[in-house]
Length: 121
Image (tube, rainbow, N blue to C red; front, side):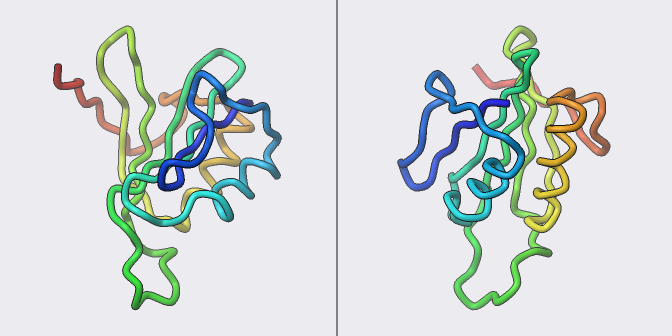
């Protein structure tokens, strides 16, 4: 699996994605990608499919446990179809989803509650 991420402008681009194992991906999500709007973690599986976990809002400073906040967009881009499978999840669900991507790949058909959204051009 390859990983790329953005933490307030820091991290590798998709073109420079790094090979990571599950433990490294987990640490990147928990330690490198802060809960700030616009930050994200992207994973590219062995079949060149991508999933991104994107903060659509920042974690409020007065929240002690943000695991319940549904502010992460799970996005499976489909460039050839100019669309994405996507859905919103709680921050606390992302770890489980990362593990699932490592087990089953970044195939959006293996994930529940996603909708197709065409890209605006």
